[in-house]
Length: 330
Image (cartoon, rainbow, N blue to C red; front, side):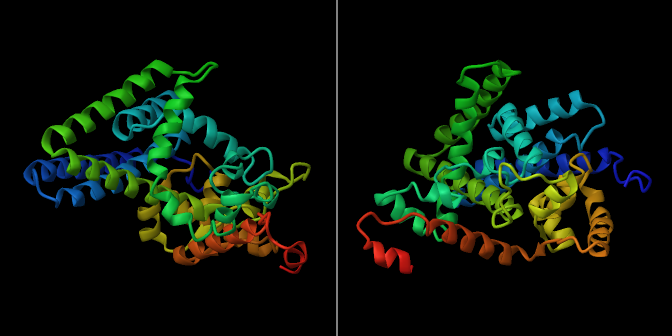
């Protein structure tokens, strides 16, 4: 990878991408002003949800040192994009995502498979009873509807992290950036639109942002093998075994911010997005030559895998009023 120049930074690419996204944001703001008072404003809200997600992909890449060679410059860029443009905590994301990358799908180590609204492990699902159990048994079908609230959840989790106890690097800078983001967004929306339309605008923007984020990140690991807490795996096997690529090359990379090359991203987390396609060819050939499973699916197929996996895990949530013999047969 190094000899092929695949670890070299491509600042030109990220500069052009940032410029393109900034132009798109400017266009959305212009449309927001011109459509003042029209329900077509909800189309602008949906567009903002898409644009903010694309900016989130860029902040994610900065957090992995993919943009600049300097760690400080990456952090400054990631914090600027994450807090002021998106309204999320860069520190919270770094803390959570770094632990995921170190131990993807490992029980007790990966925060992305811990018990939350959804259960990703049968042991967690088995603790759900009553209404929670009924929901968990059908959680796969509820996956995409729940993502409508994920955008709001990301903002709430960010603020809770920054207001929590313990040291948080850049705490006040991030709180100030997030406050500035929402002051501008809320101020503009409620100043220009009637109250009811303003709430609808914010709801659509957050819903699109949450669904787009969840639909892009979930296919990468959900439904892939879970690593036991005591299981010993080398770095290469651990990263390849738990990750899934999405077919599509250019369009998939543009749509998912490079997350479609999840295997290569986990093996070489600082590799810039434009080099991941070439890295895929090398890694895939290496795996095929050594009979190492290399998982790659279509995007829609991956969503189906996620839904089936969640429903399978959810079966562990038993109905307390169900006949024990029927439960055993099921």
